[in-house]
Length: 80
Image (cartoon, rainbow, N blue to C red; front, side, top):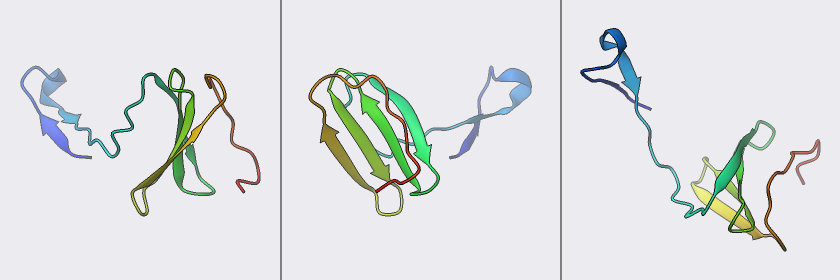
């Protein structure tokens, strides 16, 4: 993440920048969750009926299709 100072920011404070790591093409992405055990990032695409996972160590993403829209999910003690 980078910092940027722009005119109009409060007291000239640096504003955080953002970097797109993965263009997941979600219709409605929600539930952004970091798993500390696996060091992977999970989210749901509600309208697309899929669960996504991103592994920052190798940049790979995985998607699982769900039988219907997935509004939420929870991580469990055993990630396997």
